[in-house]
Image (cartoon, rainbow, N blue to C red; front, side, top):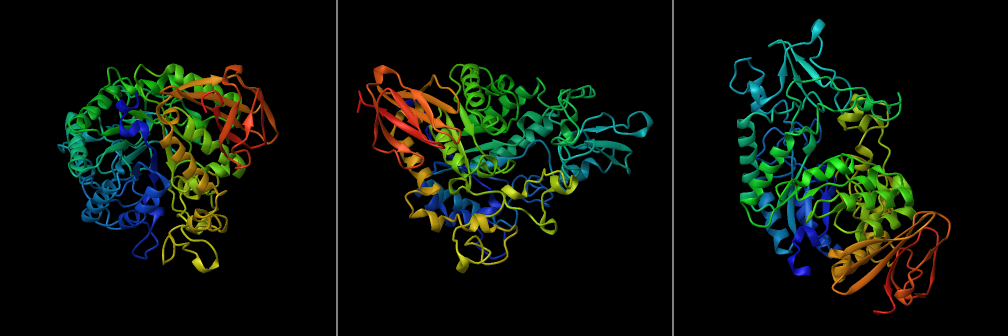
Length: 539
């Protein structure tokens, strides 16, 4: 059964935020050589694939998500030779490398956009989205930028507005233009030819916009002052257009030119629309990112509904995936607390499908408060005081803790680009690696168990009846079954186990307290506990 599964189905994806992982040249900014220097740690942890955030030449308005050259390396991060050495060394450790591809927009310093804005009749004018002013000379539509304010900026020299879903320094490409598509697919091939194992495609659902540029309708659920002002409108015409699936299929076609590559799509959509990005007959993304563990309240019954709804909506032969944190979302421990972060780790690494782990979550890192003078995030700079900044979850990795490690925490010998924070310096790799009860040790044991147990890696999923703060399910493969039981609350819970199990033995406990114990009938779940159990009948 298990032999037919591919590496991206069986494995664990680990997101490396390149600026914050490891710095080798003392400038306080992480680099490609730094990632390479820490590959042995990732191999020890059990990582199968690295997703590396953008390292391409960039003015860094959005920390690399404003690309000025799709086929180069930003000098802050190293060189093409550094990248090639990283790929080679990762492959030597049986680790895959996934690049972050940013196709929706470029930097306004990209040669394509410079040409496009030079004149209305420039050959590259149609490579971007240009429109005449609306009535009264204002923006052509009411579309909003995700980073605040209108999504249109007037170019006074040509008298037209250009569209940017994010910062004004990130103009959107026109994906209805066939020349744009060809150029971007060639950029993908450049990296595939260098041996990358796939792409995480940034804001995939944004690529195609309404052909007639209709205004977006108001969002009836929006309350002023709650969350981002971007939510004032429903992006009915500025994202998730039907034609985007043709682009997704073409991208998938590029990867199919190469052997055993993966396409992952960043998509924040409800489950019923998310699963459309798997495509038809295998022509969509292999893994449209499923962020519902992030966006759903941390409540057992709501999470149970989301899991069941997702499992029920998956197309035939589609492979599920789960994401618990990333560089755009507050750290898990900051969202739900340290105790529940351990429970969340068990949930992520025992659900059916490919898990993606954000760097530092294996240490239980927390958000760090960033002093106003050190803010780098464009979203925070454009909307100060709203609490929308993403710097707090992007702070550097604490490799070494304690006073002797200094403010760089083993991440850098210089001044780190963002402060690590005292709370995170106390959660370092060095401090946790030898501690059996640490968050890091829990992650390593979970990953090792997942590798050893086909039931967890590729097995089926069946929910078990649960009430209150308890959540439980069965995983099975090759005639072997495991039970996962989690308490998403701070009070003990009871769970009735099926009689046919003949009792159970705990083979992994998030707290470490219950391992090796046997249970019959009714299972007592301690507060903030998560268990993996083996039925006595098969033990």
